[in-house]
Image (cartoon, rainbow, N blue to C red; front, top):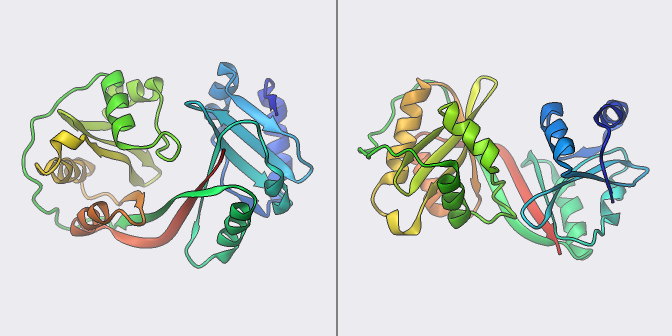
Length: 253
């Protein structure tokens, strides 16, 4: 594993690999990769079957891959904890087959997600009121850490949260927040977190209703745990339905 230092060289190799890709979980956009390179957080593993990129996170690495030879994934044996997530259509068995094989090679199944989408328009159910709160980036990060595992939660760093606060991409009450992004014509919920001692007060429902009001009937979507019954019920009550996409997270330790 070596640190990536030359962005132009990396981008050129990505362009060469993409036309022949057989298996990928996506590569971050070039601006994001550039930031990771400048911070010294991006690493590459040698392979003849495409590209294996690892981003240093909170005591572990996140793996992104674009492979012309899917078997290259089976050789990943870094001396560190690695998390990899792949999103795919529910009808596509190839990713499940690949991840099942990883399980036999020492990886563990950590989380399965499903994606839900709410069509544009439609009435918004009543969500109840809440007292708006403006957390600092550090507070927001602490709340997310209390509600999500760093390994599977795709937690933003402080710089990202500061941008969210500046760009009004975060709706919050004291001890609860909803964080979102605009992805093309879709508003995507990235995190909905309520601290344990603030639950059962209707805050998740209130924040979700406020989010939908602010989006003005725009199409919205969210990823949530496939076995997280309370979250699934909440979103479905607001008109979100499974759209045929799911994902798996696996961990190598």
